[in-house]
Image (cartoon, rainbow, N blue to C red; front, side, top):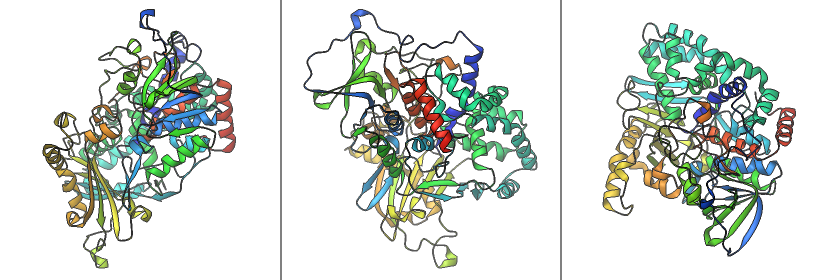
Length: 588
């Protein structure tokens, strides 16, 4: 859940941001990639020396995360020659899959939705645009383990949810839930009203939105404040008093954003309510794990003439005398020149470090904006990846050792459901082999447990990854992961055949995430300060978790598509939207 974001940033900001533009004629853009990009003084200009070798393409994308691959796939679809450079040996960034012997592990997202058919999910829309897909396995919910007891949250089951409220809620729970649905209905509708692929970072966005999502735009205006406000404000407006309901939505908020309901955007949770509760709603899992989704994006890049190069880190971004990003220098000193633009999928700190010093924007604490290295960042994750023996893991009624059958997902709140943000209190568990047996040999399960973006970097800072101190800290910090798993499979330690513990240093090393972060914690409420695709350097764009719409697979896919569309003329963008609408895949 913590990795899916439910299109949170996208749905939260776009209607209100567009409305603000319409109401404030002074908030003007100029033509794409020019005018608003400040240039440093002449003394900061960087001149090019002789290159060891060089090549030319239309667009260079730095980083093969989901955002970068989404951008590259869309650029290739638009007819731009696109080359992606990835430092890691595996594409996918935080969502990559990896193998250890016969076992296939997901490094990141474990819960997917809106992927098995055309939907409002931006990643699904990107795959539809490039006509790629994977096989999706559907299921209907996850198990909740809280100090008060256990229950199965079944998506699309109103009667089941009411039974849960009767069991765990107080005397006002059902009444509060009914009022919340009434208040939240218009917000939920507005949060999913505008197609993600309408986004571009220039005035053409207004035309794209108004031509493709005018009814949704008009419907969003009356609830703009609730969309961009905190979800706790929606709870207050609905008069929700029941303790269990308040705790439940604090949990959902934390699962979406790593923050509770007082700091999570209203649209994020409102969209999730509309996504999980309507009758018949199901969740999706990709056969082959997250690697299958990444492979589909790579195919989308290559089928239209693009290229994805692994183990090829970018050393610096090239900026010419006119202050325009003109390409990159990769390992070995090879230069690749980009005729149209450079798009960085690296985190904001990493992107700024690649720029010549004279072109690095100064940090702006307390503010937002593009390439701002002072944005407050989320903590990191702790991951426990296991391969275990599955013999005897059946219900007692079937001769096994468990009180009930295993399911693919669990959310475990260890100590206090009313203090969801407490340190190492919430653990997300995924057992994907429940649905996809191809991920492990017969007789085995894959297990993935992690803390939801609340592992601080400070205890790890400066440690040698080969030292006994590092191993001891991993053991100490992973203790609650084991504690959660033993609530599900009591003898799990005795079943382990493969164990991998990933720390913030792991994220920093393999994914090049500064201090292991997953991105900024929030964006300023003033839309003019939101970091979008364009940056202060001409022809350098940004996508991924460090810019709008934010953290999460759907959000970074939306940002990648936004960057790609910004690079092409509006007519070509509108032509693609028209094509997708005619094919019936542009939702809503």
